[in-house]
Length: 89
Image (tube, rainbow, N blue to C red; front, side, top):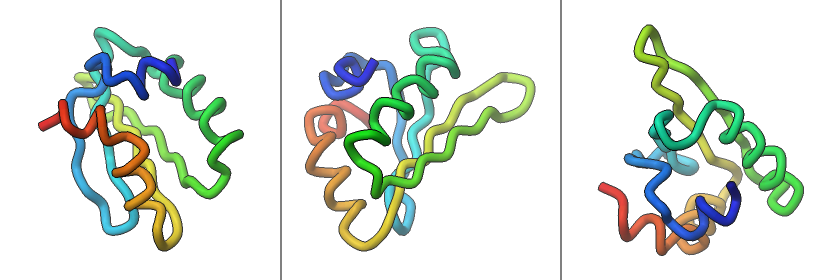
């Protein structure tokens, strides 16, 4: 999953900026809530400065991942996920 996110294979289908990071809407037809949770578990080992928040909205089951943190984290995310960001709306 981590490699898929980094490779930008389209598992995420939208992003929105937050003051201290980004929120990503996950296409649950391609990545389940469990997939996202497993990715977070791996990612937090290499990036303990991230704050991860996973949520499910309403009846449609939309999954959101908030990825944020202290000063400089938003810029780190933008650089680290540049290939993916270039492909997202």
